Image (cartoon, rainbow, N blue to C red):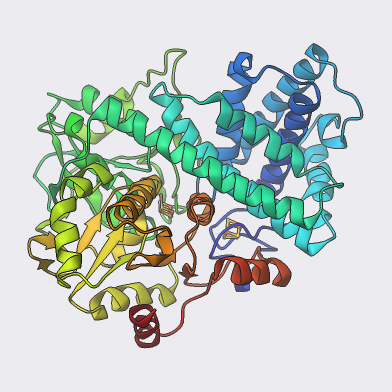
Length: 543
Ligand code: SF4
Ligand code: SF3
């Protein structure tokens, strides 16, 4: 087996990519990512065993978060930058080992490599399949994937100046625990739930960071048509990159459009002041291949999801920043103050034609917890009067698989007295349907990016309080979540930690769940897959 990866929903055959990733990841990139994760585990063990003061490890903390982020599906395809990151992390690891007293260290904390060849050789012996017990492997990987999602959100918060040392400390502890052979499957199940607990904390931190810096998201109509100016398309989740791009493009005659998970930026008051911030172009990440062709202008990736571009022409217009990377695409790095220079992107935009219109009209979003709770009286009244029978949380990710048509059909066929609460790029499966409203409350309430699933949890907890219930599961709320990459894993673990039961997860259950681990999730939490739309709606409505 040349590589092995099963971290995302599109993994080959639902079991694992073994030759090349369905995502486009090469064997070499997969192996280098395995080695990077292994190195991080070694660093974590040194931090834990050496009782290092995490609050003083500023650079290490930052690099650990970035490294985890680099290994998220569709974030970084650049073997060169991952190799560079491994070298950087090894030197951080070795300096750290000298500064503390840590004994009985694992190989991950001591191994040495000196060339690409030796890295690949080492990677082959430390990848996912090197853990022989399939249940331990499954739990360790689920925790690691949750930590990747957690790191991504922690990094966004950190970019806005908000950090929680407790969260970073937990990341070290959990990564180190994945090296500990003395832990039983039960210990690892407990650690999985603890990962969910920190998932709630990190999403709350990011919510606080975003709202304190950019204001409270407001209900907003977002234009999906185009104007006749040259333009830049910004994709991914990082709002500080967007802020810098808007500052640098203002008054230049270059428009800025959001793509995929950047759409919710339009809901924040801070970005409404830019008159070159035109709207959202296109759909979820996987449709980018066609949409980038017709956009004509440069594209800036701030995070996942990148799809390997099919043409040289498009590749030449793609820029990456932060943890993202793609071979042959220009990478823009931040200076020591976090400032990024987008002048090359702007200059390129000026030489290119305006975007081609692919749709017209608008979509509505911005239903964060603050907004929905402001409508709480109306919502509670509608539930009490029977005008709203049920809420459906349909947060998560979108993806390429044909089976995801299920979510469009599900939204279309849901009874008219139900409301969909959404977040993440899953929304593109139904956010342009005309589903109407219930007494002025739209039937699709978009809270924002995948991390704004936190808003949906806050709404649920608040409703529980308003209705005087002792259990979140007694609310008229059903969870039909679509997942793809590792941020959805942390969102799922966070919901489990909050006590949400009977979550339906699709379009397929994770390939990284061993039969026994899947059984625990089914028995303890009532997790289920999806079936046919008609059957599922009947099941949910009668639950
Ligand atoms: Fe396969 Fe997904 Fe891993 Fe890519 S990220 S190699 S598609 S499992
Ligand atoms: Fe989408 Fe990649 Fe997950 Fe933030 S952009 S939700 S898939």
